[in-house]
Length: 184
Image 1 (cartoon, rainbow, N blue to C red):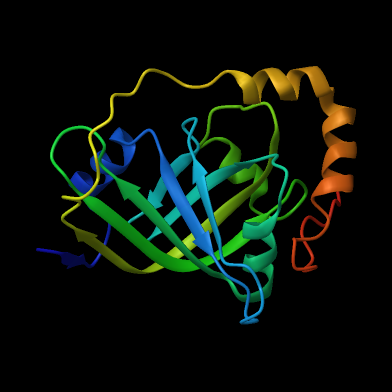
Image 2: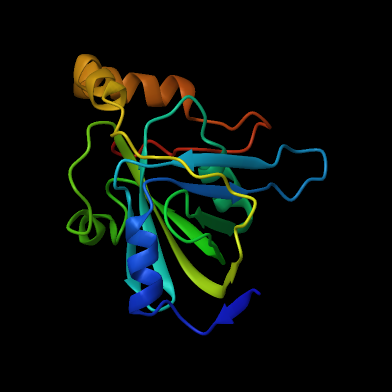
C-alpha cells in the first residue's frame, strides 16, 4: 500500500497544499527527554524544492522543536487527509532553525504570508518521503482558521512578543537551549 518517493513531485505538493493541518515530530538525543509532536496550520508550510521544505514557526508556549533541531536536527512531518481519499504522507529529514537575523531568514519570508507571532523558520532537507493508506484517519470538514493566534499576537505587540519569547522560549522542557533571541 505505501510507497517511497524520490522527491516531492507536483502531485505530492498538491496534496500537501490541500491539507489544513500538519504535524511536526522531533526528539532529544537523551532517552530521558520528551518526544515532541506538534500540530501546525494557518498556511505556514512551503515546499521549497523536490527535497526541501520549510514552515513558519509561530510563537508558542514551548520551544521543543527548535531545541531538538539545535541538538540533533532530526525531524518528521506528517500530513493526513481528513477529506477526500485516505492518505498519510511522511517527510523525514534534517532540519535547521532560522531566527530573525540568521542568514537565509529574509529569503524565506517571501515564501510565507506575513503572520502575527512569527518567531522563526524551520527548514528541512528530506532524506525519505513516504506515504501510507490512511484508512484509519476519520473524515473531518474544515470550517476555517482559528483567529486566536493572530489576535493574541496583535494584542501583545512587538515588544510584548519579544518579552514573551525571552521568558518562555529560551529553553525546552528538558532544559535544552531554545531561541537565541539575537533579534526577536
